[in-house]
Amino acid sequence: MSEWLRAHPEVRTIRVAAADLNGQARGKRIPARFADRILSEGTRFPYSVLNLDIWGEDIEDSPLVFDSGDMDGVLRPTERGFLPMPWLEAPTALLPIWMFRETGEPYGGDPRHALAAVVARYAAAGLVPVVATELEFYLIDDSAGAPRVPPSPRSGKRRTGAETLALRALDAFDRFFTDLYDACEAMDIPADTAISEAGPGQFEINLMHGPDALRAADDAWLLKLLVKGLARRHGFAASFMAKPYDAHAGNGFHLHVSVTDGAGRNLFANGGPEGSALLGRAIAGCLAAMPAQMLLLAPHGSSYDRFVPGAHAPTGIAWAYENRTTAIRVPSGSPAARRFEHRLAGGDINPYLVIAAVLGAALAGIEDGLAPPPPVTGNAYALALPQPPLTWQGALDAFAASPLTRRILPGELVDNYILTKRQEIRYIAQTTPKERMALYLDTV
Image (cartoon, rainbow, N blue to C red):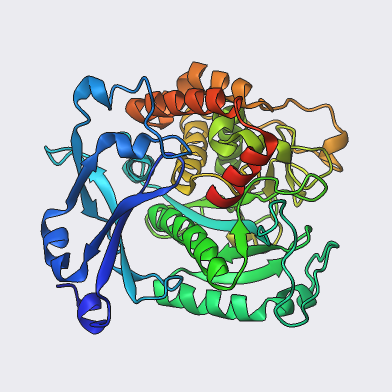
């Protein structure tokens, strides 16, 4: 048995879970006394389970289901090992897993393997991507159907106005955030700063940067599970839905990226505020990839509600220094910490796929020696800029048609993702606005 389980004899059940293409946790509940078997042999479930739609239904025309007999893959523990699940009442351990073929080869439809392959390409070039994430979410009272701000556990009042960087907004939910930080420490999630954001009941958690992109994606995925689960324990909901309220800012997923060499030197730094030529090539690669990658950055029907000019979500393909109106921002600060921030993705994404997509695009720009356009200045919303597809169908078409998609991601994953989104587009057209809100608010 693992050292962690030996140190936690109170744990009687474990969950094994992998991320599907939508970032949903798919897995099993297993008595803790069988942990040794899982550690040595793994577990099994169908390949198709990582390729379900957002409702958890099979993809009707998928070759993974009936055409192949719905064959099993082998799921093995990731490097993370056992973790507590502080949002459950009974002491329970979570074991993150990922999927392999019977031969031991990685399964190409697993989003974590897709990211691992991109990281391996960096390593082959003698490069190490350094990644940090910022996740925005709303705390929501969904008990009455339509979402609204939950009452403060301290005062019982509902604050309906914007509370940008307001300490009183954090203090109103201090018990929740204290439990959240304790849980992050227990799960070894490197939660750094928490702030209140531009929407009522909206907050952001920043995770520390590090030279392990797989670990960063794990942390972001686990944080989403934790925030949603812990909010329910506190009597309200948490949602990473891209745009829960029409009149307020949407939820973003911001990704900070730099690249180091084998000695840990930041290759985006040149001693000045402008950054190196390598930084420019990486930015150029990300800008060129945005139309094809929009389906990953905005994966759901409600994702496109977020892209409203002037609503804190970029709508044009551009970059700038220290400018939050652009899709890519180069933050100010110490030249040694030079990096870019990719700001286009919503909070409803799969962290593995978005990090794989952005890192893959940056590497393509580096490999191809691309040159970025000049940085813009001022309000990017007021400029005539090229735009990524701003409809779900348009994003799907661009994703399917671009050769860059298959250059960055495994072909099997691309094919599965296209089938998944085609089915979701068909099904969503048959739902009411109320049904769509209920689906996305509590799922993504």
